[in-house]
Length: 461
Image (cartoon, rainbow, N blue to C red; front, side, top):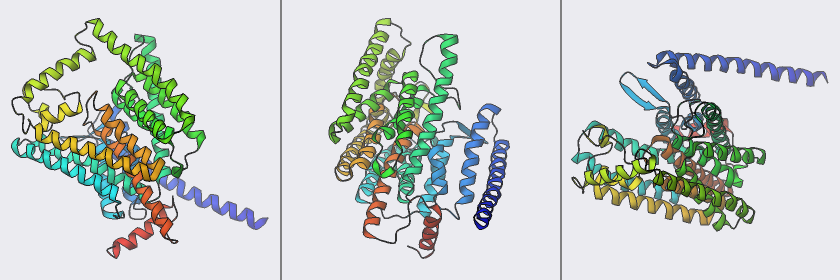
């Protein structure tokens, strides 16, 4: 009994020694980043916390190589902007870039045929848009070319590194946490807005200001994970059920039509193909009234004759983008041309329209090849790997559906579904490796994985 008490005391003493050390380190990192930012207090606090977490990940990387990519998983949801001197980028982009470099240097590169196919398909699109970078030489064009590649291939590789390390469950639970934070922020904002201004679409103000379509799209992807809940992720039902319904409440409050349509169509495809009879009633209950409300909202906006509502505004933008495209139909006006064009100073609110105006018919051809290829490749992956394939396919499918109704190339809205797909692909390769090997590292053990990867890196793999 005395030995047991001594062991317990030693355990808690060691735990306390590590807890206070890491708390102190976290506070110091957050404060250091905060004072380094040239931002106001409101946004600076969010930026500092997110970047402080990334600093901790960098410090942990020598011992635990996948620590930074794991900490980047929740950070990719943060669209608050950070400013360093004259630069301006989102926390999401910064986290993705740092995690991408870590995965490239320290992760295993035994890519599956599906993963290689996705990377090559993205390379096809990048090649076709490289032509518009050459034809239209301005800085934003070049920067966006690399940015677009990072949002797809970079996100795939980050997800791959996390899934290949056996951290799929942790990654999805972190996404649940971020989805819950966004949903609670949406609800809190709604309470204030409904009392002061009446019933309307909610643009969350906490924990950082968000557009309703980003908040809705992010919550839709989290809801999709909770709905499909692949068995390999071992997600507890006590987490998936409340998260799913909380996400639906948040989406309803934002009134993001693109998020609702993407989620409902993804759930419908999953239910029909998987034959999940227990989900058919749920999908019907959600889809029928959801479709009615979406159609009715569009009809109301058209009948209102309000030329400034979202429906009329989009129609006007469509006409303006078409008129602009005709002046450079083959190679377009350059990626992010609206930053430098004297009159067309808005981002086209539809995926293919944006691509054809930016990169011309050549870029549009590459975009169509890429997306058809993505869906075909992931559909085949679904045929072989059931729930993992279902989540990878529906996450990517929901993004192209959402892009038909609003902006497409928008930071986290693109990267999050590809991170999810990458996690699924990496987890599948890990599972296959385990089936063929008896000495593979245990899942969810960063220490063992780190030691194995360090030795593999030093020996040149």
